[in-house]
Structure formats: structure tokens, C-alpha cells
Amino acid sequence: QLQLVESGGGLVQPGGSLRLSCSASGSSFDSWAIGWFRQAQGKEREGVSLISGSGVRTIYADSVKGRFTLSRNNANNMVYLLMDSLNPEDSGVYFCAASRFYNDYLLRRLENFDSWGHGTQVTVSS
Image (tube, rainbow, N blue to C red; front, side, top):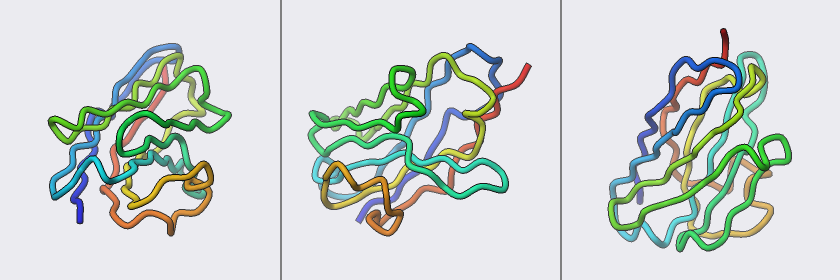
């Protein structure tokens, strides 16, 4: 069981960067895959990126590939999402979520994730 808290959201200008953090509390953090999702106002939640428990495996949605970088530090139970070259279409509430298993299709279904944070707002605007 993990409890997750996102932070780092805010207002950023187009072309700028932002780093989101997901802080976890609970047992066996390195046994959980961590995914990031985002939800724009009026739209469905979509998968953004996924990292395996060890941090060796990562996957990115095509819309963010090459701009976002996902990493984790299992020593302090933290996952980071570095977002570069942001544009207004990246705006939304960003959530981190935990899964007991990892595969390349995990982000396609929200129900694959057991624990969720409450989200952090990212707004890209000038």
C-alpha cells in the first residue's frame, strides 16, 4: 500500500520547464511501478509516462516523447517528471499513480493502478 502526493505544479510560460514530484509513503516503494497521468479541463484522463520499480524501464506517450523525462530515487521514495518545452496543450491536472506490476500497456487503463495522488495543477500560459 502506497500513499502518493504530487507537488511542483504551477504557472509556466510556453517553452518553459517544470519539474513535478511524486512523494510516496508506505512499504516496498521499489516494488511499485509509478505512472503519471494528466487531465485537461473537460477531457478524459490520459497516460503520460510510466517507470518501473527499479527505474530501468520507462515509457512515454507520443505527445510528450522527447520533451518529458521520468526518473525515480528509491532511496527517498520520490518520482520526478521533468517537463521541457511546454506548450498550452500540456496544461491540466497531473496525477501520479502506483501499480504492483509493469508492462508496456499499463497506461492504457486507469484501473491498472491501485493508488492515486490528488493531483497538481500545471498551467502553461503567457
